[in-house]
Each structure stands twice: as structure tokens, then as C-alpha cells.
Length: 310
Ligand SMILES: [Zn+2]
Ligand SMILES: [Zn+2]
Image 1: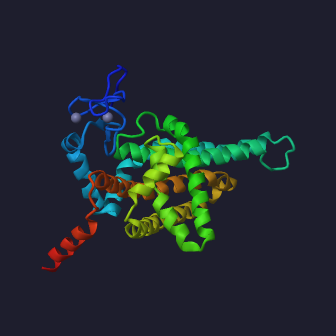
Image 2: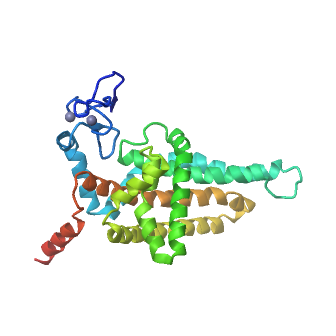
């Protein structure tokens, strides 16, 4: 993305300053005219330039949308190494804080001082942002650079977005459950806009609302399956943890002490899987949406089963 610093005016809006030069043809345009890329900070002067430059990107995301679980699983498997490298230090922090907290407690009554508890929760949440940033970085051109820096920079807008979504969804639940579920599905992707695209909370919520227009049924089915698959991996993670805790009795107290480390690791790795599937769904929907198309998953699935039947 080339951001302009010269004082030239937009050819379509003679009263507005040009802010971008097209990443396809180089023409200058204003904010109003600039067309966003699907998965990067690039901007285009027109739909024609978008179509020309984004056709491969569009195909890639729309193809993956036809099999979001398998494509998500592949993205997760490909991201596993950088994900582990990034979350291991966070898990160590999460494990170390209670240990040091108990030691620094002057009363020596085994409790953890408030400051350490706050730090524990901070790093706990931070780990989820680091996880999401790693997966986004693997799948798109967003969240480039150090994931640790990215996650810390976006922590407050991200938390504010979730708080606002939580309030709106909570109000929905007060009026019976269905409006709450509906609002949760419509606003679900606000977090991706807040975390990866750098949107402020209100814009993130609006974008998620626009993205899920007419897609609530599909998104509900998708989220349900994605969370079920994630939970299956989560339970296997717990299984491994309990086996380790049982077969390593000589570690004694250390199993308890390292519990936050393992639990953190299980949470982040499983969240990584769910988030991978969610990103495949998100960018697939976004690519269709930006091209002004309705996702043709249903049609493709029907064609697929027709082929198998014949
Ligand atoms: Zn152009
Ligand atoms: Zn313009």
C-alpha cells in the first residue's frame, strides 16, 4: 500500500485529497474511492483493478471455503511450529507467575498477591492474541512483524471490541436466547477486524455485521462443527496431560506446579485449530462479499454429491 503524502486531489472527487495510489495501476485516489484488498493492506483505484490484481487471492480463499474444516486443519498443521515457538514463552510466564507470586508473598500464607493474579490473567489473555496473530500471519499478509508486538498493540482495541460485543449479545440474551445467538453470530468476526485489520471496535462490529448478512444459518452450522472439532482435540490434550501426570509420579508437586503451563499450552493449541477454521471461513466469506457474490458453498456441495452419485 502506498500512502500518499503529496497534496494532489482525487480524480473522481476534485474536493478530496488523494490518499492512496492504486497497487495495480498506480492511479491516485481518495479514501472514498480506494478499494480494499481481501487479505492485505493493498488498495485499488477501481473494481476493475481489484479484479485484475486479486483474482488469484480470491480463488484461493473461495476454494478453501468449500472445505473450511479440512483447509483449517491444514492451516493449523502448517502453523503449528511458529505457534509453539510463540506460545511457549507465554506458557512459561503463566506457569512462573503463581510460583514467584507465592514466594514474594510477605505474609507467607501460600496465597498469591493481587498484582501477580492480574499479571497471570493478562498473560493468559495475551496468549490467545498471540495465537490468533500467528495464524493470521500464516494465512494472510496482516499482522506482519513480531506477533508479540502485534498482540500487545492490538490488545486494548481487541478487548474493547469483545466487551462491546459482549454487552450487545448479553442484551440479546435478556430478550430470550435466540436474539443473543443471532447477535453473537453476526458480530463474531469483529475480533478479526479489530485484531488483524486494525479497525476500532465500532467499525469492527459494523464490518462483521455486513459480512454475515444473509449467512447466519451457514455461520451457525460452521461454528458448531468448528467448536466440536476443537473440543475433541482439547479433550485429547487433557488426556495426554493426565497420562503424563500419572506416569510421572516422581515429579510429585511439580505436576501441580506445571499445570498452568500444560493447561495454557492445551488451550492455545486448540484455540489455534478453531481459529484456523474460523479464518478460512472468514476470508472465504470476505472474498465472496468483496466481489459482490453470494458464497456458492451449497451449490458446490450439491455438485459434489451429484458427481459421487453418478
Ligand atoms: Zn488502478
Ligand atoms: Zn475519490
